[in-house]
Image (cartoon, rainbow, N blue to C red; front, top):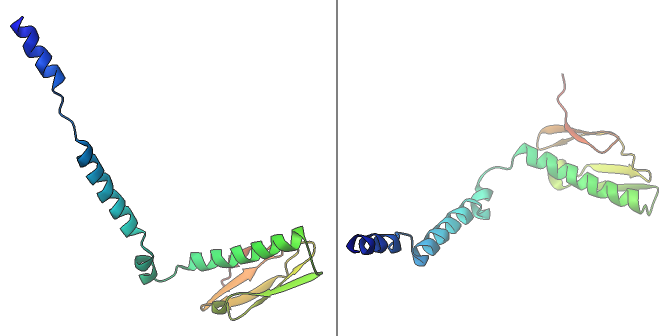
Amino acid sequence: MFLAKACNKKLRHVDAFSLIEVLVVLAIIGILLTMTNSPKLISLFPAKIDTLEQDIQDKILSELMKQLLAPKEKVKSFTLNPPCNNTTVRIGAGGLVEALLFECKSLKFRINEAGGVLRYEAE
């Protein structure tokens, strides 16, 4: 009988973290995760070239989709953002993009007829 009571006491007492301890740890993890993705911290680092290329690609694809879905004019012209020396891109009503070489932040890019942006390196 004594042995059964001793075993029963050990089974009831289970070491675990309290609710407050779990909440504190989750709060610390949340603070650490938000600190690493801070916009102030990200703005300290220089913009990557891949990001610039992706921004140009996104702008061209959005204008291309507008021209494909509901063309308001036969040829739509738009200019890229100022780091790209105000380059003008022309898209036809069928979605054909005028091939173009341009310079942006001392890098050369090429736009093909399908609207793809490629970094151009002269040989």
